[in-house]
Length: 172
Image 1 (cartoon, helix red, strand yellow):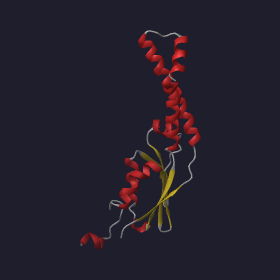
Image 2 (cartoon, helix red, strand yellow):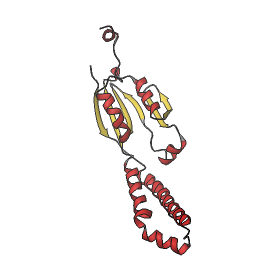
Image 3 (tube, helix red, strand yellow):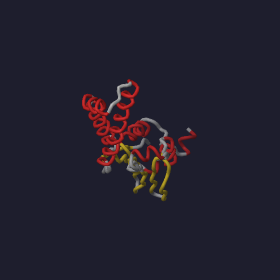
Image 4 (tube, helix red, strand yellow):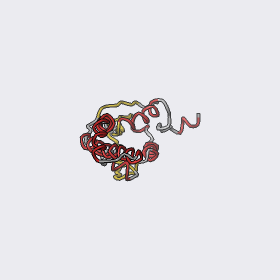
C-alpha cells in the first residue's frame, strides 16, 4: 500500500525580521565591497566613496533589497500530511531531518521538533526554521519549510524509503 501525501500551506512567521536582517547584512557587505575596490584602486577618499556609492546604487542598494526579499520569501512553510501513519517509517523521517543538518530539541511520543544544527544557519534564520513531525490519529503531519519539502516530497510519493514493509511483504 502506497502512502497518501497531501501538502497544505502552513502559517509562516518572521518574514519581516528575516528581511531586515538580510537587508542590513547585504548593505554592510556591499558597502565593504565598494570600500575594498576603492582601496585596491588607490583612489579612496570619503567624497569619492560617497559619489561611487550613489553611482552604483544597483549594486549597493537594489541588489541587497532583492536578496533580502527572496530570502524572506523562501521561509514559507507547508504541512505535509502523510497517511496512513501506521505505514510511515518515523525513524527514516528523523534520519532525513538529521541528514539536512537538524537536531531534535523536543521529543514526545507523538511530536518531535527540530532546529538547525549549526549556529550560523540558525542565526541567519533567526531561529524561525523549526520543522516538526506530529502524529495525529492516522496521519503524520510534517511542518517544514517549503524548500525543504521539495526534497522530501519525491521521496515520499515515488520511493519506498519511508514506507514500513510488513513481514509478509519481505518474505515474498
